[in-house]
Image (cartoon, rainbow, N blue to C red; front, side, top):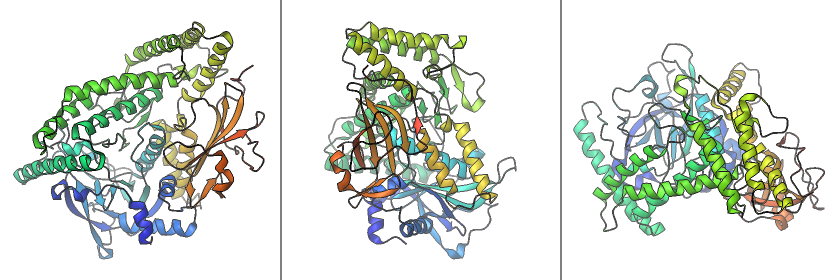
Length: 610
């Protein structure tokens, strides 16, 4: 088991939901699993918490702690029996409401123990009446849990306000038949930190547990009152914010999240108030998709599609404002949903302009005329694609063309891509019509091409169908005994995450990424500063006890400290001079180079001064 100090380090700063009041959670019992095993952990997150998962003994003890504390299930009729004699445990289902008139009373397959949520435990007392089979059993499939881990980790690292990370995935050792009686899908548990959701401030007005409708209604009223008054006090004490200011920040953070999502075509599927945190983080990635273009993608038929997120969030603003204004105890200003929506809309417009220009490295160009013309071109193309609707639950019937198909050298010249080639020509025309000198214009055009070649192509490995297929294949291979290594699934998941990264938020804006290598412990980008033609290696590394992880070993931080770059969210960041002829640092005291397996975005196109 982990030591008390290690557990304290893991739990430090995480939200304790039981402090809010007794009505925000509902207890239920679950049985200990006999044959559970950890198949993936979030190395990055645990290293940030000062848990050295590179040490085999620490990793063994961490895995055991994860199983001992979280490997429980509410049994279903067709489960192999859990060993009740091995122990039962009380979990807490967190209650929350919604503005979509859903019939659940909160988490239907998630239980809380301490500072963590366990997803996939089984049906909780908060499952609504008359739900479909998919929402009735409380199961989480192993492929689904691993897929969510991939999406959560990419989102946590790339989106401006991140995501609530998946910390570990546990294979329960059990299977559950599908609705048609086929399959026998392997069940899993997914562990994540508890966070404060905006949905905690809303009533679950349609939740009616059989025989307990009146009791549930009274309890729900008490819950929302407790939540509003608790956080009214907490935000004022801890952040010196009134609820009005806090919610304004929440929704403007979501505006920036949506802008990044639109530009990068990484769509969570919905922005329900239960699927985001009060800090603007995303959580719950079951409907997440990496989209092939900017069309109006509808991942869940009950929710608004990609590019039309405003109505959904507007409904949440109205619902939350009503309950906050009704139950707040202080004399602070009321929440005004119209004002919240206006601030959200204005921030979304600003953020979309910034994120769309970033796709072509134009976001910091000083010539306003270039930025204005480029935005007009991009928004017109975006608007054209938004006229086409794709409902993924009904199956994709038609392929739309996309800019990413024409940005790389040697790209397709099909007649169907004439519009896309025209968009690129118009962007180049916007640059050439600017007030810059000719050399600067040519340099900017080359920078645009290299950046677009990295950011615009579809991230094929995380397209949902491709990702599900790859994960199912590695699960089947492990189950068939074709792989002897216990870390087969973990290696596969980490490899997909590494190869699918494209955006590096802490990277200095003047640098162009030519190639990259990534792992949960360390990332290296081979970059060029196009203004002066100098090359660099950018490093993001886990840091622990004055050491940092450099590719495959711990390295004394003092060795690389002169190259430290201050910025970023967590970990250690460094910028090293590099050779123009090879992705190797020219720092004489270091042997640092881009390893085999690195991804090159444009090895042939020069984008520096000529």
